[in-house]
Image (cartoon, rainbow, N blue to C red; front, side):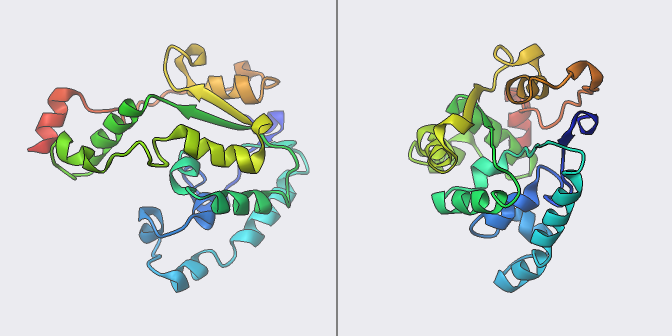
Length: 214
């Protein structure tokens, strides 16, 4: 376990993907919040009523025998789209931590778009690829890495930011988990960890996409 080597994962930040931590600082209401009964500002306040205290208490407890905290989520990129939101996140985390390493895994934008289209089809949002592509723009925070990661660099500093290519050819042993540990926590003994691999949310093939559209 990572915990036995001094690395903590928190529960108060939300399962899965530390989604509650991200949502606390994002603007607007997305499917995660709606699925948790949040449809307006009043319900949002109720949902997050004890969040800061629970997070503080958990971190304080974990700090007794952990030196590093690890938060992973693709939603840091997709939901925190304003510099203000990222600044608020850092201001909150600064109460508990004084050093940061932010590692971002990116892939070529057309591959990102194809993956999103595949996910959309799986969610029964049928339709052709041309229709799906209508709202894609190089000015979009989601695809413009210079724009999006420039915001993180501005808030956390260039020295804290690491960019990696999300590709099997670039990942250590074709495994993003091993690659992350090697680049962020090289002191961790990976031989003591169990890397079970469950293949989930793989992109549909061209033939499968045609079937899902029908």
